[in-house]
Length: 215
Image 1 (tube, helix red, strand yellow):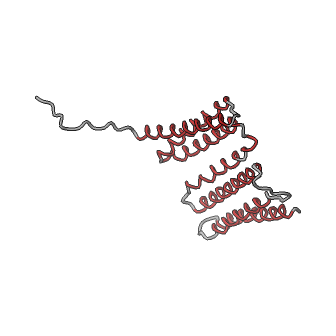
Image 2 (cartoon, helix red, strand yellow):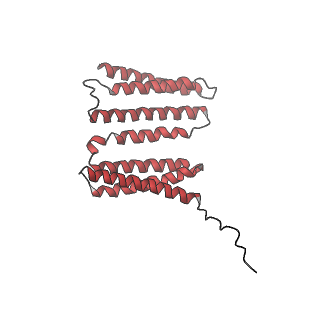
Image 3 (cartoon, helix red, strand yellow):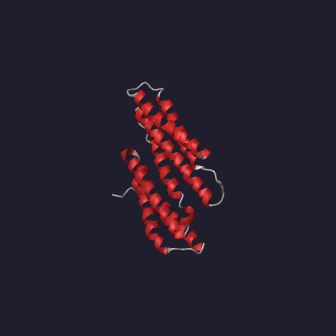
C-alpha cells in the first residue's frame, strides 16, 4: 500500500496557557530590560536592585497569566499582578536612584489597584454601593499621590495652601454622593447604611473646609 500524502500535516497547536505565559514573560522581560537600560544610561545604576526588580516582574507575569485566563481565578491574578507591579516599581526606583523623587508612585499605584477592584462588582446593591465608595476613595488617594509627585518635581507650588484639605473634602463628597445613590434602592438596612455613610461624610467635609481655610 502507498501511504496517502495528499493531506497536509496539521499545525501543532499550543495550549492557551502556554501563550499566556509566553506573552506575560515577554512583557516582564522587556520591562526589566528597558529599566536596566535606562538606569545604565543615566549613570546612576544600582545593579543590586535587580534582586527586587526581577522577582517583581516575574510575580506580575504570573498574576497576568491568571488574569488572562479569566474565571474564578481572575481576581486572584489581579491581586498578584498588582503586588508584582508594586515590587517592580520599588526595584525600578532603587535601580535608577530616583527614590527621592519617585516615591509618590508608591502612594498612587496601591490606590489605583484598590480602585481597579470595582471591575468585580457585586450584584447586591448594598455591597456594590459600599465597594464603589471604597473604590472612589482609593481613586482620590491616587490623586494625592499624583499631587505629591507634581510637588516633588517642582511642577506645582502649593505655597502656604493646605492643599490636603481639598482631598479630605473630596473624600466627604464621594462618601455623601454614594449615600445618596444608595438611598434610591429598595433594600433591607437602607436607612442604616445611608446614615452610616452620611455621618462620616459630613464630618470629613467640614474638616476639609477647615483645613483649606487654615482654621
